[in-house]
Length: 319
Image (cartoon, rainbow, N blue to C red; front, side):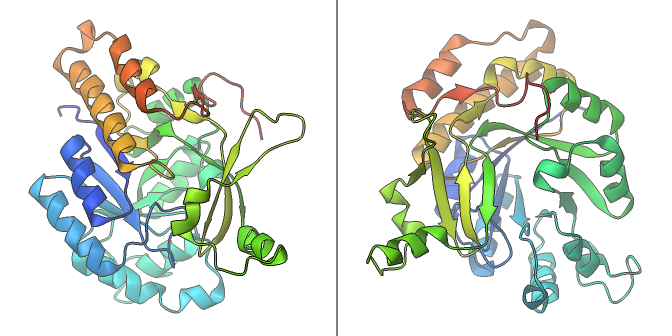
């Protein structure tokens, strides 16, 4: 089979979906705040349906994040939501909580009581999706993809794909990562404490709120707050563009660009550059060479206060 790796990006609106597909992505992940966390925008089923039209027109895929941590009260509507997504024919859902799998497939897998027996499942347990044995456990229960933990280094990622020849492996290659999550709305509580009682929501991210450590004042950790609480993000952006070839040689299935807290024009540029790099490899893997001008184009739009780094790709595992 011809190797055709996926270039996946997050999007927060139907317009963003269309623009990022035009830029060269061939898969997009969206979601609704009630069921997904750390989303660039709140995409209700009608917006997901509209986005599917753009995806189908370009023979691309649309995934829906159902990656929240579910409490009992959130389970009541989950089955209906999964049935809705299955009816819309989204290409897969991204989940971490086993409650999603149990609801989609039911306790006795694939019975008539299953809410969404045909939905493809992508397992993303954030920092705990660290080994191929656990991936195989979820594969036996219906997952067709593992979203590898961002804390894995290059050697571990290559071994994971080698050990999972019949399971998709998705790796984040660009953008920020989450390092802390609290269900409390710490930002809103802080502004209420100082007398600013207006709700601080997604639209107010223009304030550019940061957490800064006393010992490392040059590093700024963006604070993102949504309906699911407060999220502290990494102070730098992963950028694996220079060393994409080992991952392509290993036939990694999906390369993800995280677009959270970035403008759509920034994400368009990044998607275009990665698209060119991947296409260059596919034309002639043996003659593929990294081009410095690709990095120059990303540096031109990169926030000067946010360093581009390899993340954990060349570090020992640290928890």
